[in-house]
Length: 333
Image 1 (spheres, one colour):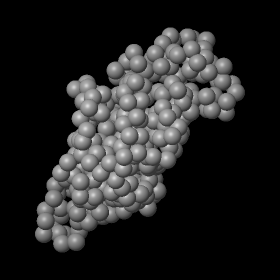
Image 2: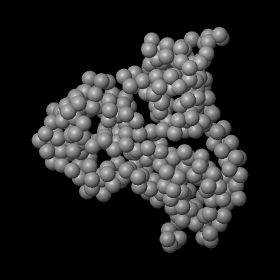
Image 3: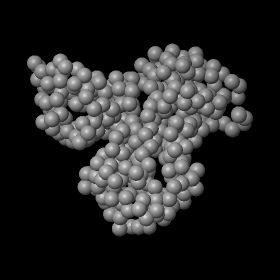
Image 4: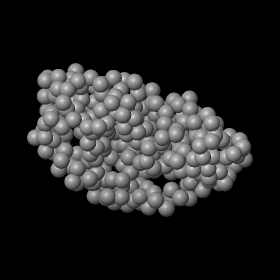
């Protein structure tokens, strides 16, 4: 690419907002695009946080030529939740994207499932619902009506392969006219998360003093461990107390087997950043009793629902016993 265009670091390696210069199509992107172009076909985009679901949806909507009639709603916002609840009464409404779908109450999820079925049966070209949520979001929708399975497109986004993460970093290198000496380490540590790759690359450049596109190609000479250490220090301020609060659980028992700490550890080891608590307990017989108890007696649900701080980073679906990371920075920490 020509380096006449001078870009600033935060425009290239983006830690918030849309990555215009480092956008990479996830593996499932074309499937998402075709589903968006199919009349009456509502779409569920599911997968871990930080792998580019919302970014891919926004780009695919623009590419499908339907961005002029899109309403973006988030289940995190109470005013949006009211709109989502009343959505069936607004037909026709163009394209509605519901982000953080898993945070909605079951009664609202059921209404959305019914609406998707209606749109599919009518082959409606005037309205489409796009749901973005955690792993198993599609399954939780289908649980409200088995006949929905063939009427919606479930697009599972998984951790991105390393070559996709590397492609993102290469785009960033070209945009800034820089060679990252720690590219291989960043690719590995990102664990398939575009967000973490952006964050580590941003901090590497920041430490190297690369704040905008260089006039001549330069190579960084940074220690990846030092960059990671700096990132960890920053993340500690945001997440340490939250991690401790979760690990302690509802009651701190000196003699207990620390079920919450084990859940947190298993979650950190999961490539999909989500675990089925029941299955994990079965895989670890020594902890099975204590972990199963906090799950079946509702203690885990109560712990998460009782803390806005923990809800920022973790979500537990009691129906499927799935514990999921909401913030990629938290699992990295």
